[in-house]
Length: 158
Image (cartoon, rainbow, N blue to C red; front, side, top):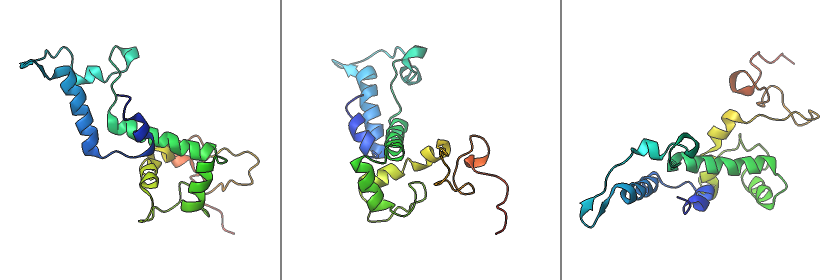
């Protein structure tokens, strides 16, 4: 289970590959040995239940892949002084935010992979106000409650 974790934190794995890896894990537990099929002691749902709840903690690879990519997006947001953060910002969103940038056709596979998890991160991410200089109160998601974390009332004219 740990072998694909590093690759999954950088790249979005194809759906077919995730299914193949799940199939290999299932065959290990339920396949055959010396021409005889193995006993199915528990269901896959039980195997994928968390360890604290009595399962073995196997993960659904597609969801786990998206979570790891979301973690990388979180690092870009919270650690803007990292070299990787600076390079990606300069290349893909120099004049906008990570959540508002366009995904261009000539973007790298890494960037496209990260952007596949952007929606998940956008649902829960909120801007920290700080001194308020960089906050656009009508456009940014900064409220803990409400629709999308944004102000629901209309913007006043002027």
